[in-house]
Image (cartoon, rainbow, N blue to C red; front, side, top):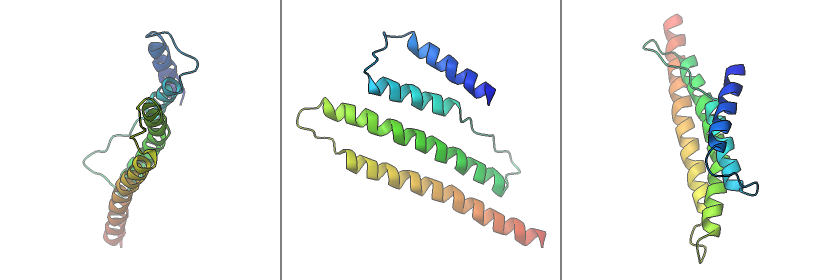
Length: 125
């Protein structure tokens, strides 16, 4: 956990060296928080002898990644939509697409973990 905090601090320092930070930039803040969330959630490797716990761990990892993206995505889309004349970006539609994608991806990995768990239980009995 301490290593993740060091990584997050280092990323924030590197990002602050670019253009002068605008304290009112919600997009910049959302981006910094998104990158920090990614850096603090490093996936565990999956080896050849994968088991259901490995897949559950990967699903948990993806769930956190999707949660971080779900915070960042609306911020960047809303800012983009705000700057487009006529408001041609439908934020609700994009949010629904994201919800479907993340739910399907997580379900796929969790279902694979469940199938593997059933196979492991069958072999153990």
